Image (cartoon, rainbow, N blue to C red):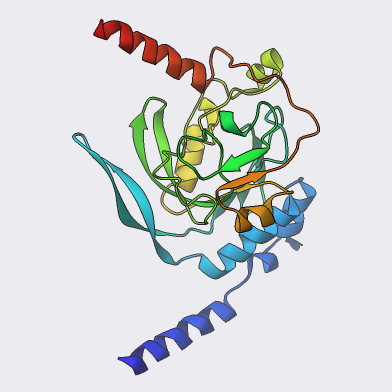
Length: 272
C-alpha cells in the first residue's frame, strides 16, 4: 500500500508540474493575466487566486455544508470539485457605490464588472470590518467555493463554502450569493450607496442566474481587501481597517435589516 501511494503521489506531482499555469495562458498572443490587469482587476487578489487555482483546479475537496431538507436543516460534509473556467474577485477595498465584483473568464480573458453588497456589520458605504463570527452581520474575507443552490427568501441562492480560517463558518452563517433589490445602479443613484446584507455578497437580480450558472459546484470566489490580506491570516475572527470616511449608519427601507425587522413585527402581530 505504501508503494502504491508513493507512485500515485509522484504521478500527481508530475502532472501538476507540467500543467499550464494560468499565468501562461494567452488569447491572441496576450496573457489573460495582462488582459485582466488592464481592465482594472486588482493584481494582488488575482495573483492569490491564480496561485490557488494552479495548485487546486480539478481537485475534489471536502467542505462543511448546510443541508436544507423539508423537515430539518443540519451541517454535514460534502464533496466539491474545483473548476477553472471562471473566477470572481470582490474588491472590498472599494465602496459599495462602485462596481467591485469582477467576473473573469479564464478561457477568453473577458471581464464583467458588477455591484455587490457587503454586510451591515462591515460598514455603511465602505466595508472596514470583517468577521467569521455568526451573528456579526459582517462580510468575511477569503477564498470561497460555490456549492449547490436552494430556494429561500431571496429566490434561488448559491451556497458558499469558506476555504480559509477567515471564512470557514460561511455555510453555518448562511453566507450565500443571492439577489437583492437594494443592489443596482439605480439604487446607488437614488441612495448614494447600495443597501446592506447580513454578510452575504448580494448581487443585482439581473445577474443572479449568471452567478449561479458560472460558480455552482466548484467555482471560486475571492473576497479581498488590499489592506487586510495579512490580517485575515493572523486573526480570522476579526479584521479591521480605519476608513478615511463613511456615512451615517442609517438602515434604508429596502435593505436586509429593515426587511427582517418588518417581517419579525408582522410575525409577532400574528401571534397576538
